[in-house]
Image 1: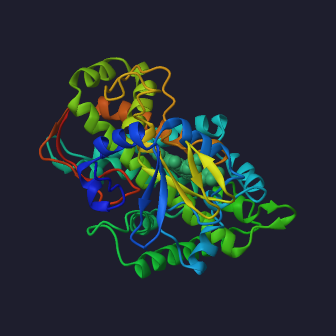
Image 2: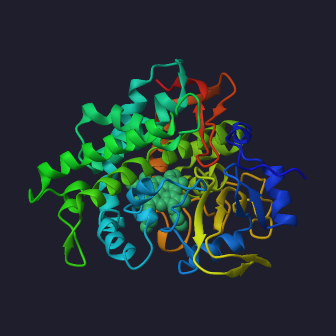
Length: 399
Ligand code: HEM
């Protein structure tokens, strides 16, 4: 079978299930050509994706960051200050600090605010209005929540979203830009974050920016460069991904009217439905690691310095782990999907994203009695971000 899972255009038709199934069956650790003249290993089965994620000594996030395309040294230096691009021992102290804002107690305290934001979004959309579900409904909640956590003034929220989209959807002709523009967006965003931080230094604030800027890691304050990268990561990480989960999740429900009706009747089913949506929608197709030494994986010899790509959106359909993987089952239990990754870098915002999706669905069902798709949704052209940019829909308001 001809395998091309690199070209961003492939993903405009959704997850390339046929290619992924072939890889899992025939070459679970597969050497794939890269347009830069080199190649990289594609890891498509659940077992090996977990193995690579767990073994952070052999598979480094820091050496080459998490994207399959190698970066210029100055950009690489910058992104190594994101949690996502740190190896131990740098990673743990910073992660421990940030995680204090994502504990279950903190999230429970945040819930009424997130619900109010969701309710406000539903109220804004008129009855039977033709909308782009992604932009008009799904996108506002993640941006509002993340900007609230960072205490960013509301007039800057659309700008944060624009910067963020540019960073995550660089290869899409509608959303992206040249590498220089993308780099520029991330620098502008980091600079903006640092300006906010300077105002909040020693201010005693409780928001995430105040926490990070006043944080000591191993006895030293977080530097300007570290802060800027961290800010960018946190602002970007929760935007596109959660929007993807919500819009693609609703699309799945529109295609499964029985599941839709069950959830509408019984909100207690929503948490397990969200897990199944995560398995299917898997908002990030992959993250990359770089081998630190010669090793072996799934019977293949991996050389030090090789790029290794963990294909989450394939692992989530691994027939040796998921019974009838192509069935959308809102009661699936257990559901060990890898949409949030695994191991020391496991998504910090996972429970926040779950909560956003749950509250979005609850408030959606309260506000609307129907969702009709009025056109074919179009996917973001990207080999890493999995989600729609357009989902034309019409809603019927309850009252
Ligand atoms: C559906 C929504 C989301 C998905 C699918 C998602 C997915 C992921 C994945 C796959 C990773 C990497 C895990 C690994 O390398 O093993 C990750 C890491 C991370 N995510 Fe998320 N994410 C989502 C939402 C969020 C939100 C809302 C936030 C922030 C508020 C967030 C913040 C982070 C951070 C800070 C990391 C780095 C953690 C570390 O390296 O220690 N994510 N996410």
